[in-house]
Image (cartoon, rainbow, N blue to C red; front, side, top):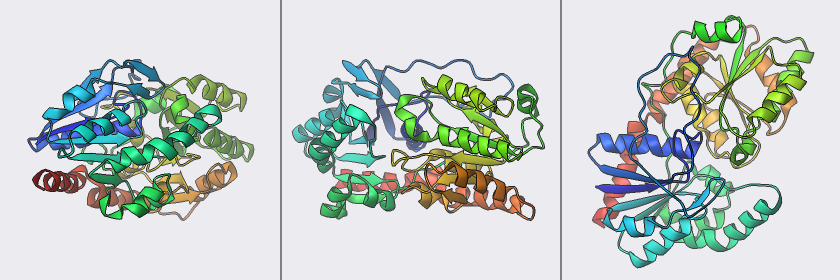
Length: 391
């Protein structure tokens, strides 16, 4: 099959949507399908990653056609070229939200009613101020039209869809919806020895409990809850409980977070690694005893980092949010969103005497292998594509 994926962001830009698409199309490509990703040309390559990390196998950014947009704002972009390019594909797969381009795909579908259109609903859009008002209008007027144009609708979990802004459409067209969790590369992310060079460069003691956050640090990812994480670390410090943390990610909010950590007196126990290339990222997980996902809103619908942690043999503490909890509850601990006191308490409890952390590690690794390995996920997706094409 010839398959087009359309997404608003794509590696090397940090973001769950783009990473999901990359892993999906790589697996489809291995199976002999002709795949192309349409994504805006508006993210430049980040800075060089820390030299103390060693590559974990070359990870190429493949299948991407980076199209110059006519208009951009944040992760929104209008790429009108797609309307002239999609006719040659057997299946078109849109990843929503994609403001500026999603409605162009809907219009393309109107003129090509017999061409299968698949839409994955990744997340609700949340924002304060006027952007929040725009999202409310868009969700009420345009979203039903866009999602309603699809032949097949996918959510990472039905639990999330039932709590999401797409709930009304879900109740009206349940026959169109399928649940398909995201996956993880269990070969790239796997248990290894802790990278001693990383600890030495950071000035960390490798025996001290080590926490990890991975995620975007730009305005589009304001909901990641880094401020909650830093407040929890401050609580631990005030209670003379010693932990250390690595934060992986970059963006226009990173400097603000670094200044906050400094103001809290955490500079000696919180290290911002910035952007870490895909082939080096697994070693950041290998440095961690525990991965933290402190997101605050339904903008976080699943949490790819949870699966990367599981595959690396690292348990998680995550916010109790729809979609997120369906994953995190299997291999970690949940805490109320935004509650830094509860997060601090959960961290202390995990490292308490008597907790079998080795068993935790084995359990989450097995979970990744048995439930979330990409080949199993793409088996289902490939079957759905074939059914649509042959209908």
